[in-house]
Length: 411
Image (cartoon, rainbow, N blue to C red; front, top):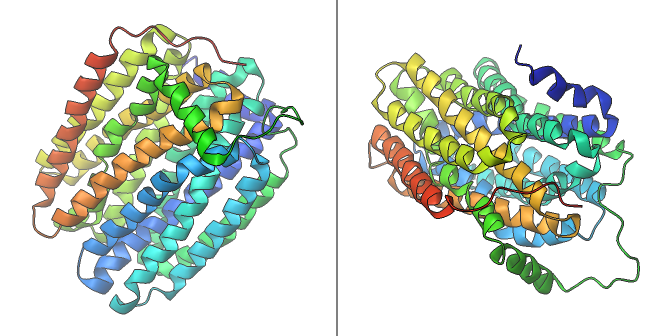
């Protein structure tokens, strides 16, 4: 076993509140993909078009991008535990709305339901990311980031694969009900966290108005080239994310249906799960962070260029795994570097800006795919997405090659 794996995973057993936060994230991410894969397979069956699936994905990410500046500010002001519990409740309502999607005439309800879940995630994600350094000891922060970074990948594997299988065996609606029950469990886990999820604030210190608070965070980022580089790095993978729109259709080309689509999303998650573990040593060598980020996003784009050319479905699965190994590494490396730079009082807003830029890039990519998916060959769309990421990675590395390495974790 890799010498970094056991110490990394031990943070889950040693840090009780981190374990609860991590398990809650597993449930939230698992429910998300347990719903999304059956829905993306269901919509083309009901409507005969790939457009509705693309619109669902675009709504999921676009609403996040629009709301994150506001929700990041709230994460720096309001009890983060209350934010996450309320977000779980709102996501539960959105998932239950999916039970009303029964034909082409009600396909619009899928967009509304996913939009409600997206609003919930926009509040949940910055609160959870900003809270993480407060639920672990400082010495365990790198390990906690590696483990937390695997949450999304872990439950994309579990949620997507089970969602595909159970949707084919029973129905998408059974998956929607199971996801709703799971979200109740996630809220209970967050409720049991005992450590404060933010550092103490001075009781007599006035809160700046919302736009002033957002402006403070933007000025903080703009004045620090290294932070600016870190909040733009996820956009490379985001701009290549239009490939997700093509997954159900691409599985159809190989004749593997819902199970194949679930497998594509599952290996995507598996890559995102393995990537943070493999890159764990880089977290302890800050001089490798920026080069590692450039390599990780380049790997994503090159692998998808290979997917577009692959004649075999098994090779497609391998290449998707490799692509998201790079994508998962990119996410965790940039999160850790940001936590090493940003103080707690600004962390929620900076992480919200970081996620806003990433999700805005994803939305642009998915809306572009939605406009082209019914008129351009799926392989061309996948190749174009991969090429965009490679070009962005090269430009980003050229722009950041002389930046100093990230510093130690901020107080």
